[in-house]
Length: 362
Image (cartoon, rainbow, N blue to C red; front, side, top):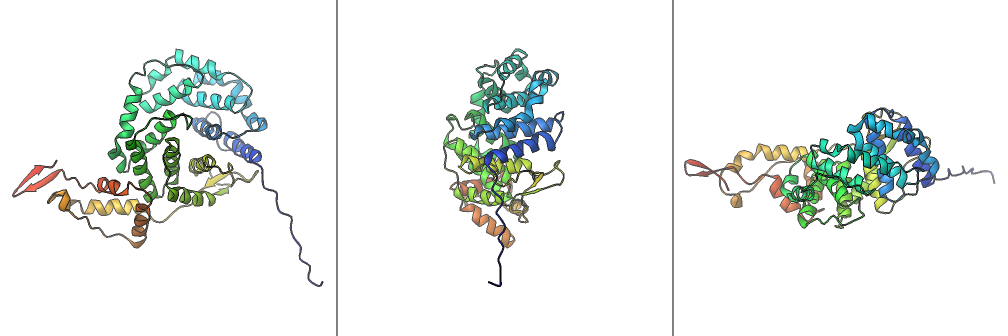
């Protein structure tokens, strides 16, 4: 043969254990310093994803936390305002197999110090309660908490308008009430509708971070997760890029949430990770700002809404073709789209015209 074809050997695919170790090394050692509160946040999130999705984490991967764990009680005592991060990290390390039993003592100390009394938000109270209950510690002063949480997540109209703070509180309340999918959160159809409303907004904005959390929350509720949403997120995750840029404003959290959803749905963890090449994480950016265009168009026509009754009004807006295509696509992804859109367009006028007078609408 005059032509010789040379085949290069395939690079063996990294094992899940190797990929987990690479990610934990990155988060624990390369992105930030342990005295940075964002180090606490990122490491708590990474360990929580691995623990809640049932990953088998090798002891050598957890060894990177040895020095931190050895002095965790001293750090907690000096930084009690971050007690939820410290508790979360200790609990998940021990649940994943790290040799130690400090989490129970830390939770008892936090309860004795009544640190939960310093929380202004029911969301943080719910997280603190969930963490303490993992080691059978009961916090006091939380009467009526579940009732308030359910009232908030059942008020679906709240979530038909863009409000990221409320949206992330919704998903996290489901995480805590369900013990990250381990128990029935006892939600109603109104809560599922709330999650759909946030999911629709996330699709229109192409916000993968929030959409992934919505899909996870729906799964924890035992509700059907729209297939079009998960398909879009799967494609989005497959386009992740790992580089050497700044980690201060990269897409680490977005990547982690998308991968968490993939893990919960049966995929291998961190499939995109190549050991020793993990650095900054960049996720795809999209040009179509459907949510912004749609909101602006509706606001520009709001003057028409003060005339006539809601039943006889027809809202007509002009949208760029790509925005209209996105809106049409999203409309078919959720059974709750029509009700969402009615609330999103604010077609419930405050003022109605009665002859030459204006009266308050009902």
